[in-house]
Length: 257
Image (cartoon, rainbow, N blue to C red):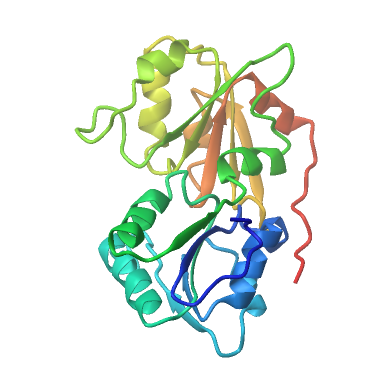
């Protein structure tokens, strides 16, 4: 099915909203929002996208804020199914891409298990787009041939962590860390302890795609201290490509409604 096909009553569309700037949402994502009877919206989804919705559409805030409003994933799954089963066109709108640390597959499975037709409309992933908005390519010819994207939600050594930081330190790839503001001191220490050159360039791009976007640049051994004032959402880039942030002025896109 084409991503631009009409959203039918009794169905769900899982829509990635991109990295913050509403102008970076896809055409298919906007079309789904315009057709929705119900929108379940995350706090990182572009707030301005609500202007595209029908005046009759119900907009439900299902934010998951650290130390703030929190909607359990199980409840979000229930709401998707409940609204679709009574014949509504349901859109789940979140920031970035829902299949990159976004629990999109959990929502797809919940709909499928309930017999609710579901469609995926990918979004521009913040793991690549936010560095680019800060003037940083995650790969660069002659410099690096790959990149690794990891969640910093839990620190190295935590029982829930499945990341091999020793392997990452040796990988020769750009390292992109999402959800790693609070754990950045532990992450950078683990990388250096496992052999990564402490002088390796690193950068944090905070609120990428928003008017108040900020870029902080330092060596990996110093980036956590230099960026101690930074608050989420922010993405850390570690590798030689991070040095491009020092010479590139890359403002966010203008918002488009």
